[in-house]
Length: 119
Image (cartoon, rainbow, N blue to C red; front, side, top):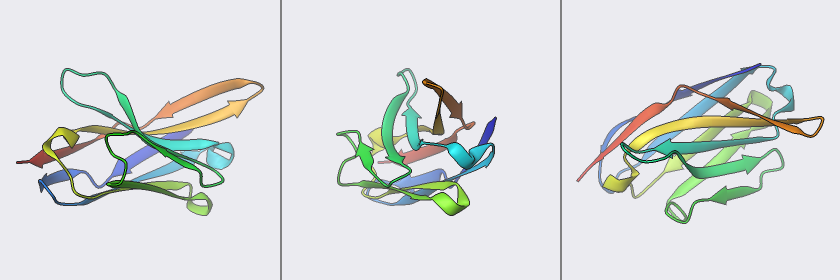
């Protein structure tokens, strides 16, 4: 089992910045991919960004150029630096970890942290 704990959410004005952190514990030694998903009210959860153990990152088109994901493998921690925030970035942000074991992908989720961007 992997436990994920997010921190860093809050309220910010449009154009501002926030940094989210997610610390993994438990059986975190073999996590392959870590990332951030977000869910706005009335909408489905969507990928914001993810990063592999090797440091390869992928971003949703809506956040490219504004968000940066990074990872500290030694600390099993993933970060999401969010700049130039927009009201449409308002959502609950969930940390995600994926482990690949015997051909099966196991997903783990944090409880989420609220990000609110005011106009």
